[in-house]
Image 1 (cartoon, helix red, strand yellow):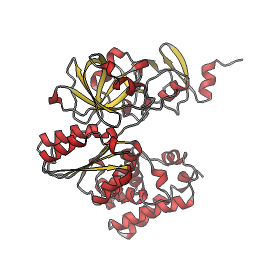
Image 2 (cartoon, each protein chain N blue to C red):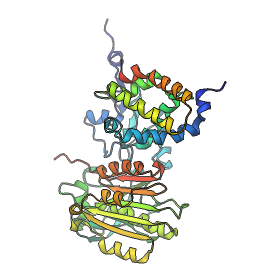
Image 3 (cartoon, rainbow over the protein chains, first blue to last red):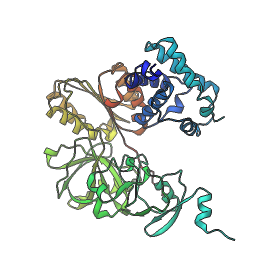
Image 4 (spheres, helix red, strand yellow):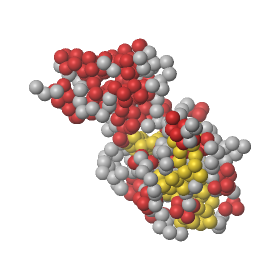
Length: 119
Length: 328
């Protein structure tokens, strides 16, 4: 039985997804300020790592990294987490990922909740 | 029993580096540059982003690749690295940059005053100065201050052309724009930056937005594209605060006459932000190449907007002209 990452389409799928996801996030005024940066290429790489994580793919990005990456973010809260999760789901659905796989990816994303919010 | 200072420091999370033979206590969460500046050590720097290549220091110890990647191999071989892109490692031994290693002499041969306090400055390097049109060089000015200026010329011009705006309190810009420099030598280093034309997609549409002296690299890139027979549509947007600031109107109009695929648009603050004008005229940038030079705010915002207009991130070339704050 292949992994979720393989079933979704591996690195190529993640690469297709990252621009869709990143643009949704940048266009959302409730969270875009968290993503303001002069280095968009580095930021895109981080998004790609997050998406790989959400697909249970090769893991460069641990829970500890997620915690450290979000530690400095002033005022980050449930609504922000929910907004980003929503964009992840919308991205997967837009790319035609089957419902079961979307569910699996969203469960993995949900598991990052405490690390992201520093709880 | 008392512990020695270094053990105490490590407990508090501090590390110690050796700079020019003296120990310096550092916060490992901050860059080496910030740590040394906090100790009031006079390290030349500007952008703190790894772009301007000014904050070079020397070490034989291991450093991160991002502090080395932007530098040319001759400097890397000598142990140079960018101190703003490196965290202090315990026990690191660092030396300051030797001007001889970094800078070479060049002669200021001509200066032309344009409108809007901008001067065209022509510099002849004594040695070979290899660069791609659109890259920048660093100049060492009074008090050892280093600033970056984009190159407006082509290598085939056999002269380096800079467009320098004289800032009211600018240490280097005022010195550069003064006629006393004519016939004198200056110290330059570089080139740096990856805002240049890459051949291979000659049918690609190109959007170029430059504000103020952000036009300088655009001139080089435009001529480079023309020499490479770029066939795609080129839309150049040149913006300035006021009419005076549009310091190269006639030259651009002449270039437009020569190239049937080039359209030049001018805009001042009165007309509204030039980047918004450009994005309104070209709302779908999928497949386009985008060059953004000048005001850092404009460059940053427009990069995001161009990406959202579906330009690929790898097709967006940006060159923010950070202005170094001068403490008086």
